[in-house]
Length: 251
Image 1 (tube, rainbow, N blue to C red):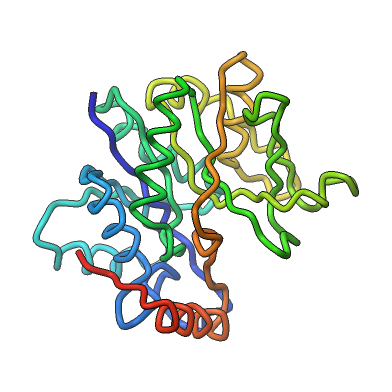
Image 2 (image 1 turned 180 degrees about the horizontal axis):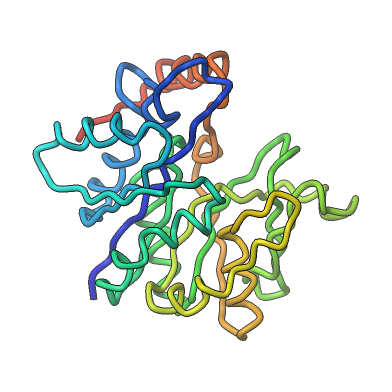
């Protein structure tokens, strides 16, 4: 069995005031995408597929500079995270192990978190494992609702959460481990019957739970794992955090 990774890197990031895809924005002089690839390689996951979209040529040019192969697929329409993973269906079909799906604009997802979440995922025999984090202020994030055994019961988006659910401080990082074949089994069942008309990857979690599969949640060692940037000010905050905490990106 071989483990692999899909990095979602098709985002435009309209508020970044840049013509580059958001994952190509720099933290300590290196694209956020590079931080994610570096963490994966340090965790022993070298079989990687990047889903590109907005101004894909920037992603392609960057990948061509690497001295190791990284596959890429093109999402011509940005129709949600589930749709992005659908673009990598052939890549998934070539693997019989597990896949970790990460956001290309979350530079502080660490190799330790990737490795430890995989150990929990395989050790518990999960169909999927959500990588979560605990935040002092979870406003705006999807909440992790667990059952009495500590397994995932649901991911509830902030706007859909009642008062009790909003009190939960454990949130979805947007990173997931899936059994490749089980993910392929539900990917085509994700619907776009929502206000945005998009296909959302957390719906795959809901479908696996509906099928009676076990889904876990692994809490990241550091809440920085969920951090991203939607505008230049937030990008500068990421740079300040990286400098203050001594974070490094080393391929």
